[in-house]
Image 1: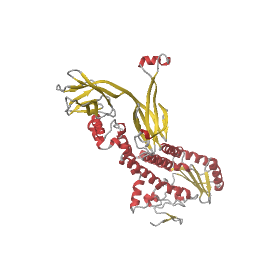
Image 2 (image 1 turned 30 degrees about the vertical axis):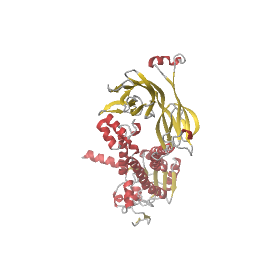
Image 3 (image 1 turned 90 degrees about the vertical axis):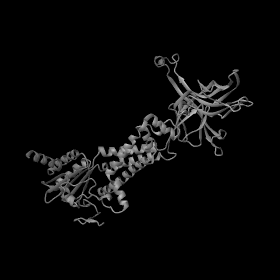
Image 4 (image 1 turned 90 degrees about the horizontal axis):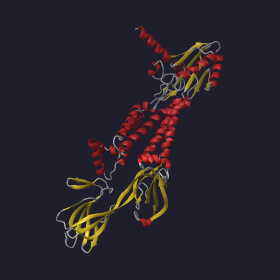
Length: 549
């Protein structure tokens, strides 16, 4: 594509609207317009110049403001949809089947559709991450497409401009003064007093102030890109962890999201205020009954040794003991373990007795560990009980089959097979805490005797390496917003015409009132010719035409 040669002799890149040297309009549209578009100084943008190759088409697609706005709307719409129902992280289920059942049970057809469309884990879905990535690409390409030619134009802008450039500015004035040189000198003095950067060249003045505000949108674009980068990094392993761990007293488990680390719950402590020791809380205690003063988990942190096998406690290396209290998390290797929840008196084990019905004779007792139950419990020679099935949280029958609504032993139920020398084929029995279901033909029964309980603590494991990236992006974004909102780029051109004739023009990207206020001060001080706001004049003439009609 050939360059455009202006009448002044300067060669401009293809697609340039205003000559980079003198400011003459280079396109037919610019020549016909009364006011020229100064958004990008009339410079050539890549998206409006190159349209042949596939790279050009991709560049032009992402540089479009309409496309950028459409992507933003899509991200906002999908984000809003993701808040209609709880995300997968907050669903109390362990398998995909349980998750589907949860949405179906609580939200009906809408919940099932929500699951089928993949909205239940939307923020980790490939298409949502793709949308965020497309938004970042759009911001980067749109910014480069505009900021590079803008920077080059402002850096190369000349002090003296062609009269056609001056005449097409919104602020324009032309008139004769008594002494053009004296007015120019006074104008330069006053503009410097108003903190303008003033350049003079061959009987022309360019006064400029607040150019840095033009970079405000691109600064906040940079901040937004950094912020989006932080969001995308959260999907990579090791950058962001937000996991939940339920740990029972005496139990040692691997810490989710922290490979190689294990945590043992030595004791969970729940302290309350008493009326005798804490008189200030006496009225509140009378009103609500109990006020908790402390939630605390005494834990031991272990690290897996290099030669150890996963899950073998004897191969774990002691790291430290710690008491996790609300707002005082356990810190290690960039991880924070917070005290978030608890459960008191969770069933740990249940003891049963095998009895012969006729004589009410006990054949022995056996204890079922509700976390890791054994398949067989031997009570004597030829006498044992098989655990055929276990329902930790029994929730009634479904299609003739028992079902459990969670893996937590809140309401345990068992199917036992009782084998004795007299009954070598065994007898079946369905046992709950308060109820035993068996046939009348059974000669033996398993009855509940007692239960052992323990407390469980709910911990949250968090690690966020992207936090400072998000913070940096947010700070840069706000700097850009302030930069572009509270300052503006003002320019005033004053140059000699024929004899003692002076031409003046002004432009700003916003706050025209402030520019005219400065120009009035310079005009009065330097005796410059009158100027007009061409846009206000056009508006007034249109109103007059409307009144006359």
